[in-house]
Amino acid sequence: MEIIKDSNEQNRLERLREKAQRLPLSPGVYLMRDARKKIIYIGKAKALKNRVSQYFRNLSSHTDKVRQMVSNVEDFEYIICDSEFEALILECSLIKQYSPKYNILLKDDKGYHYIKISKGGWPTIKAVKKIEDDGAEYIGPYNSAFVVKQTVDEALKIFKLPQCNKVFPRDYKKSRPCLNFHIGACSAPCAGKISYEDYFESVNEAVEFIKGGNQASIKDLKARMEQAAENLEFEKAARLRDRIRALERINQKQKVINSSYKRQDIIALAQGSESACFEVFIFKNFKLSDREQFIIDTVEDALAARAEFIRRYYSMRDEVPPRIAVDGDFEDKELLKEWLSQKAGRKVIIINPQRGSQKALVEMCRKNAAEYLAEKSGKSGRETAALGELARLLGLAAPPKFIEAYDISNIAGTENVAGMVVFCDGKPLKSAYRKFKIRGVAGQDDYKSLQEVIDRRFAEYEAHKVEQEGFGRLPDLILIDGGHGQLNAVCEVLERRNIDIPVFGMVKDSKHKTRAIAANGGDISIKSNRQAYTLISTIQEEVHRFAISYHRQRRKRATFKSGLLEIPGVGEKTAGTLLKHFKTIKAIKSASLEELTNVKGINKRQAESIYSFFYNNKDGAEK
Image (cartoon, rainbow, N blue to C red):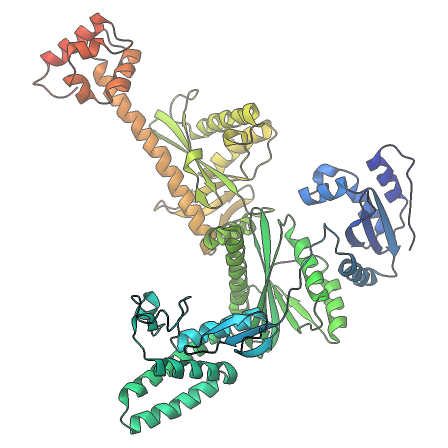
């Protein structure tokens, strides 16, 4: 290993840039160190000079994470390798050894898990992480928390055992049964719906199910059901029949997520605005045998992140399946195939399925990743999944946290207005909605109206960007209700203001339903992307509703004003003052002369004119 040191240069970046220029054009591994000489990032390169030099020039082109890493680099080392493949193996080994801060780090928290059957009059079954000296029976150990939780949940539901925290016999017959009883998932000892003897028998049957599995339990229960029927114990036979059906339903549910391949892993990525999650489905003997989730920092480059995750994940595993299905493309595909094949001692296939049951499994895995990410971040899994799908569809680096949408509303160019709605994390943020009265456009010209609105919006940004709130915050995505004409009009304004924000149009069909997304390269069909389609449709309907409601409000006020303008001595300003004070024409008509005189901005002569006008026309139609 050769260590390059040069501490004479005053400018840190210039010094590092010069050092990088002296690197060889050979494959190798580089180690970035901070001021305390701690390794903060490890990477591999096909050509060390080219790769390392990229970090210290044109910093604006880097992602936020890379810029932050580079700002902490004080020195670096490198190790020359014979090939890029050798560099990959060395990189994996060094990352496992040093756990650098800026590499994707996965915590391998697989420990032992057990199923505990408590002792006492009313035993309970639950999942635990350790054995205690409490006289209880423990089944295990299991390596997978997923398997333990799934097994316990199934046993409790099939044999209708309580899933709550009540303690029996203390809570026996002390309360009303909960929803689980009414849906047939609990025998409700809390309400005295089951005797101690039957409860104890259910626990024993559940334990036998856990130890023997579905098929053994079904065979035993069928024999007992037939025996109970012969003995004319029809109630007992019916109870056993229900348990058999519950077990068979569990089997059918498991078949839904069976794999076409005996052994394979499914890997999927769900991205949030502040973090991301990789989910792994592990299939053995054609069935889902385990699943794992890993929360990581926000992903700005999905291709690089998937490649790094695969390296990290299988560095922690002794077993590599013959087949891996991934939810998208990734870097170093052939290199990783070679590495995994060597590690497994046989050929390993990595695919990105585009159709059929394998595609469905990948989508299921991604949906579960989104649900887990939402659970950890306190957000809705549906919105998280929809934003992730939208980001992939539009080619965004990350799911958009803040989305602004705009729509123009007018009738033949009159009362020309616009509405802006904001969605935060996939939900309406109504406090951020804004209304615009078009000032500089006469007649019906949606393109120029949009340009005025966007120009005014980002002028406000320039004035308030220090605050980083409201108009002082840039959106992650702008959506326009309209097609390519509207899209081009908005892009002209953003380009002139040197603002780089993704902009797309929302195109409707002849039935005014969302049809596609208008992009610079053409229309993007979204109907096959159900979650993204639902989100876009919701945004389009909401911005249209908001804009048209403002337009109707303006028209109503204009209608009111037009009636008031018939009064001698009442102009636009006075009509507006009256409406602001009294709210309705009816209230103005009913006002006394004294009440009209007391309105700020209305003089005595005007008050008399208004009162006289409505008094003389009180039997006529409302003005």
